[in-house]
Image (cartoon, rainbow, N blue to C red; front, side, top):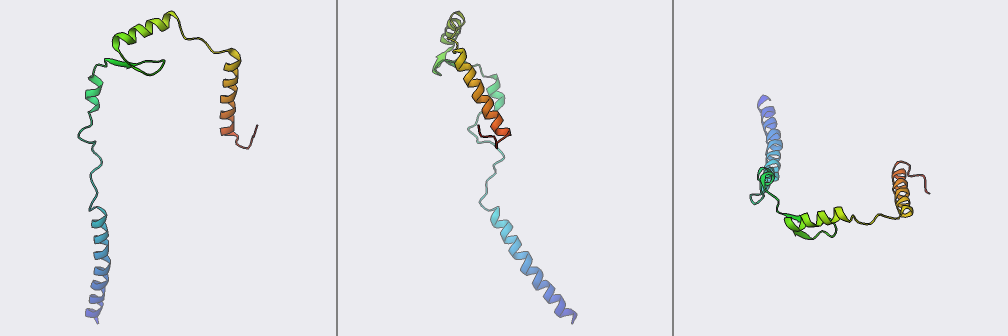
Length: 110
């Protein structure tokens, strides 16, 4: 009687252990290590020490050299871009306020 019970226990254990082991092995079979950055990625420490010699225009986003960027900054300080009309500025403020209020009170449909 004890042998039959032992055999049944071994069969049951093997029926559970073998499929679980196969599932675990198959789930990790084709996976790659994704914890490391790709080798072509430049480390942040190197990027921090890099001297930036190009810039983008704050007006249209075009690439500028350092000298062109300094000239553009000087021009903008002498003649800043025109200001918005106060009525338009008020309308933009009210639209932003409305958007914020609708996020907190979605049942208000004004």
